[in-house]
Image (tube, rainbow, N blue to C red):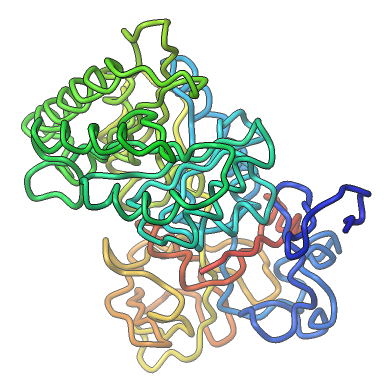
Length: 444
């Protein structure tokens, strides 16, 4: 059969869309905050309609991403990685949005990182060709699907993890009887004591390497690890622990490089969450042999939207984690606008947004500004503080003379975007003048 571009494809294979776009049909009533009159249209139509956030059509609470900050963050991180010889594959578990991912790709990112087969399928459906599944793959059906997907176009890239002979056996069981033209490239995950998965010593690493090499349906493509579970501190001891772990990752890669697989165009070593990507650049980005070629892939996920809490304080491109000589810093792109429901006392305001709309695992939301319901002039928020969240309410303490009443709107900054997006299935992307430029679908 042929798709609407005239390309022949097998039955059951979806038509290839433009990168970043999946046609989910009419908006309907699935998405919080979107205009009721847009229900019969599509997200693409809504995003190109020229509406403004405060034109009276959108409902509140509402998740808003700022286009200028997304562009700035994407370009800044791309430059940071390129200057250190790293490729960039942002971990899209944060927003689960192909449209948000495209900010990174347009700025030069190599590809995307995902956490599970569902997320991988989303980005495959959205037309992305380079996908790193940063987890062990034990879904046999998806292993077969990924191998066939790779074989359809030679430029596609896909990697997943293994960390034991037992895990290798799962993939061997799935793939050995399949008629696949391309081996499934796997990265041996390198772990640490107290971490999640990953080989924790040389013996476990060697056993896993041998198991992969004995499985023709797999290709030993490199190693990967996650240093963010080693420490959450930018202090001296925390940084030393991360450097030690990255040293172990580098040693593991040296073991893998001793076994050349001629079916592979290059090898991969990957690390780098949102707190220590600078150390990845220092410790493992350089010094690899030219033959076989080695690609170093960093996987920070929070940088695109950034925040005004955890990563603002600790990111290498912001706060205490940054170089004082660095002028450009990441900018918070994510905000939630919450309506004032009532003001029961002069110093307490109840907002119409709670745990269903706001995350709180790394600190409560921060009041940044207030406006009237039409989005008038911003009002400052000195002395304002969110003190508690219920399921649908936020308790906001304000000075008794604060200018704030029912139907006014409060812009809330958040901490840790990785747990903020999953409360929303769409994100309204707006210019600095509050004109909506697109609506990003988030697949949670």
